[in-house]
Length: 467
Image 1 (cartoon, rainbow, N blue to C red):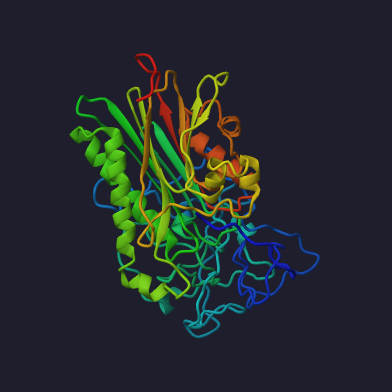
Image 2: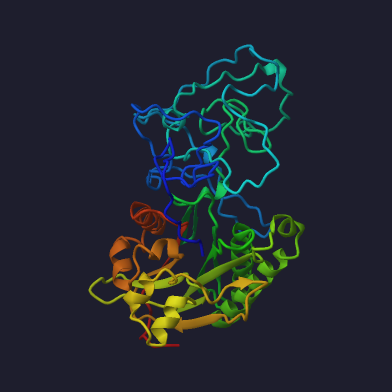
């Protein structure tokens, strides 16, 4: 679970006007390099670097790459693969021809530091949001430097056209192996800053949000068939624990392990509820293994914990809905007939939930407390005791299943609020519905990473009951 941001003191970031704490080298909201880039003039309009909502429906997001070797694509794409447009929506003109360099090859652009000191870089410089146009993304007061002449660079290896990454800020510079533009010096957005994926009738969207410097959420979605040929849909959503080491790696490892376990077990005839239980155990083992990797030892400090994350998942088969979780991410049931009541299908492993269960506080009082999001269950080598929760349901009507992190439900906490945020056509257009829900969280403030998966539940062929 990502930590809630603390209120910072003045002065403000010259780029996005967010308050800063004393000693900040980078803005925690937009990644503005406070020690290098000159402050914006007072009479310039203020531009929030990450102040835009989710991409519109007509954006053609690239298909996620196949990176796990088992036929299940990892839900990532490079923001630089999207075509650039100007503020009027017209395609950007091609970059100008290269001009002879005015400085020796390899010299940095004026006002940009390329030498990175060997000190901890907790908040690396972030590139502008890839959803901004090139003109909006340019650093205020800094003109794009000309690209070095072709003769001054090593020839690029032969490969397919368009394989070379282009900077999302200046749209002219080549991106080096370290992820920085050789023209303007901008760090490029991480591939996980915004992810979208469709798999059959289900879809998921994940976004970094407006306050965090990286996306520590991850998801896995897929479809398979049961031994009798009936379809089955699977969605896993994980939220990295921000106070732990490598939370983004933990959520990614857990989501992949759980997704692969479910998609492998269901076709063999394993009952979906047992398959969900086994998937959570597999995810736990994957996260535990990170604690022994050298990367963890290099990053870990005495005050940090082992890699950790929360997990929530759902399996939809013919007439059966199975959910499983550890932590405070949630599953909601939203019926197609909005005159019937929605429901929350999971119980948080959190301090607030314990207070409510013990009768010590009301739900409103507990979740208003600053300790509300302290989790009591997670996946990780330092977890006190792993207790996977699973439950199965047999809804008697069609609807949609919402699987999400607290980055969404913080802005739609009750089942009724979540049902109101879910579009009426979410079952028919799950990707659009997931985008709308992510936009709902960003419009509410986007203080956390936001991830949501939508699974349509078909009309059952027989009566309802509780499995």
